[in-house]
Image 1: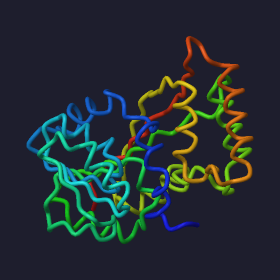
Image 2: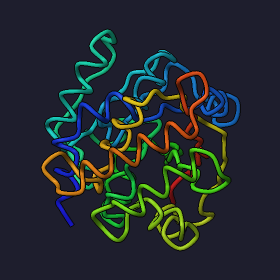
Image 3: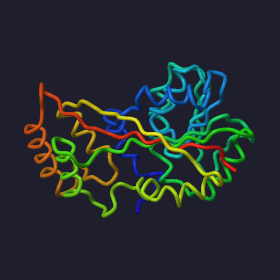
Image 4: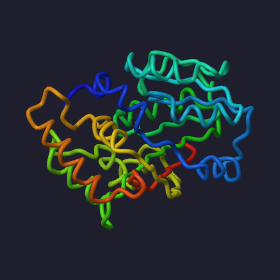
Length: 256
């Protein structure tokens, strides 16, 4: 498998355009149930293009983005340029470069499945304040139920270049084992929120190309993949858009 820190270097423009954001209910949950307030310092691990960091910045928090991929980090810096309380560092989950006990919340959006859990656990414990929160979140695309969700999944299964395409399921599909060991007793809690994207045909193509396992233009199957995407879009579009649905799954706890 291609080095996880390099997988998205040639897909940044598609990622910026087409990856889903997180629902407003997610931040409401953090405020009401985890007592998030603007004074809390956030370490966003695997911050990428800045989608998760932006939510905390808009909440008034100071955010440090830790991102090992230079191209993704540059895109995040550009996207979050309006926020003076954001800065990024060239680091990884296992070696963030951050000071001891510098974060009230350590968060990761669509990224934890690329981490080495035992090493990341040690690093998170080091940078968290005592009694700090760890919040891991994924937008998990719905793959059944008919409509465009099912059509999109058919395209993924037909054209993906790697047998295991939803790498995050190595964590979320075995959460009690993987995350139970990561958080330690009393383990973690979960919440789930509905999420969606309404997308044009060009947006859909960018969404497909934002996934590291899908063919790029130099691949022999690229044209056939786009043709199938166009057929799926034409068969499901209403008013020039289709809807991609997600379950936003949150795994959170205090590490012991």
